[in-house]
Length: 246
Ligand SMILES: Nc1nc2c(c(=O)[nH]1)N[C@H]1C(S)=C(S)[C@@H](COP(=O)(O)O)O[C@H]1N2
Ligand SMILES: [Mo]
Image (cartoon, rainbow, N blue to C red; front, top):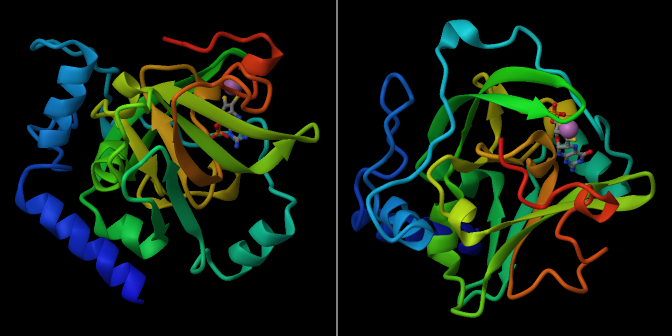
């Protein structure tokens, strides 16, 4: 409880400095004029230009968002947490950060939220449009404060696929991009297990396999060498591109 109050107080202090963070306009297409957005922009390009993934209308949402890869998680800890409605789920934010975090689902829900309707494109040849809601990853990183050595953000997951842990990573441009969110809602409902309950990444400018489901830990690192297969992601370790731009 103490921990939670601390985190929420931290978020409130952060918010005081940038009142518009997380505010999404009615059509979902206009970016937020937040400090974190500016930071992402500056880190990404240095000047006033940023590429956004297309966003869609409610009427275009797919009636069913299929699950792919892992759709049910076998691990004991995950099953126990799922049985309790993920009330005890924790998301760690650590590695090369000044302030490591351990966030509960309530902490995640208490942060400013972004909602975006985007199209998910899987390399296996299918797409689906869904509405995702959650805090921007930049909001979590502004609290944790990656050090100057941090160059990548790694996403650790609760599942294994073919016996190996699933994981992903992105650079700081995508980490601070306004459409990079830690989603806990799909179409206004808590994520179904097949789609990554209780938390999954949305990194909208990239292909489906970059969007890590069953998120347990966000780690800031200086290099991807020596991490699992060393290529920055489960599918990357099996020959796919690390920068999987759409
Ligand atoms: N943890 C985890 N994340 C994952 C996967 C997975 O198997 N495990 N599959 C990836 C692939 S290939 C795709 S296309 C999307 C599928 O998301 P969906 O199940 O919500 O359709 O999740 C990605 N993230
Ligand atoms: Mo995929």
